[in-house]
Image (cartoon, rainbow, N blue to C red; front, side):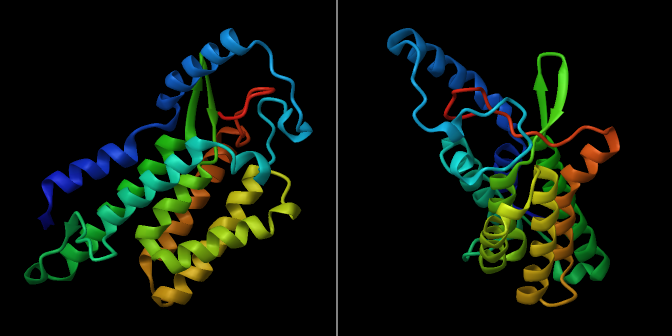
Length: 226
């Protein structure tokens, strides 16, 4: 197995850094704004959502800066892990080692990708564990696993049909099917990364069903970004 040590270490840091660890800085910034500016009048009614609303609302999600950070870091980490855009993959099989080594490397990449999504999906609210759909993180991660074309078509496609989806679980279920379809279309019907990426996108749904807790969109009433 060929390992680019520094690149591999950066992959793990970028992909396994939990999203909710960024909340401390955001909370501090919001407290400063409240002290300096007082209470804000909410001019857009769609922002006034209850915490834990299960719907995925584009007008809300596309205004969260942290979502774009997820998209970029997952895209960079996914490309560094899987390769692409003339970037060598952090893990690669030695051609002289045979097919089993190639399969083992592929399995390790899939495992790292799955663990990254699990880490981003679990949220700790004081003593309560909740589950969050890492939509933008998955969108970036898919670029490395299935290529930018399949990733872009799947990501755009799920937002197009989102109006008919009533929950985050439904959103990720549809997204997983689109990733599978476009991944196989652009990478061949035997593409293991496409199937693995689709399963990875669906895994937060499976996890929430196993523990009987819904995937929740975390927001604070009257807050612009969570």
